[in-house]
Image (tube, rainbow, N blue to C red; front, side, top):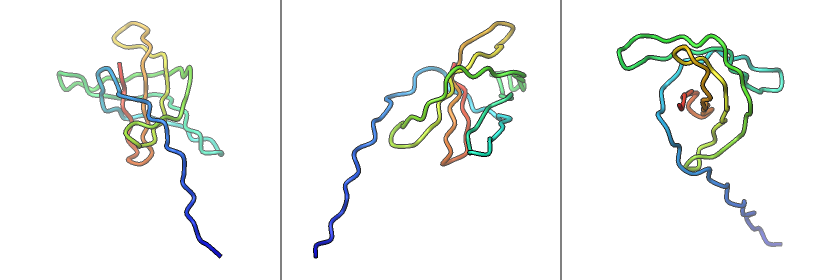
Length: 102
């Protein structure tokens, strides 16, 4: 009887993240099945002031891998400095970090 290893197929990498990344503190709701739904967030601007984004409208959510690290990518519509902007929220469950990419 031979013992072998089952090789897993390589995980496709999503490439390089483009845009300005800002660390964000995200208020999030987790469903009973474990799905995360971001509700609002706070982040620090260039002057050190705390900006609050009250409503996040999630358009799509997709599981991606960046450099082999699993990430959940949320394409969202937010109010950024008085205007509606499409942005990407990135959640990395391994480190429990949220980043806003504009």
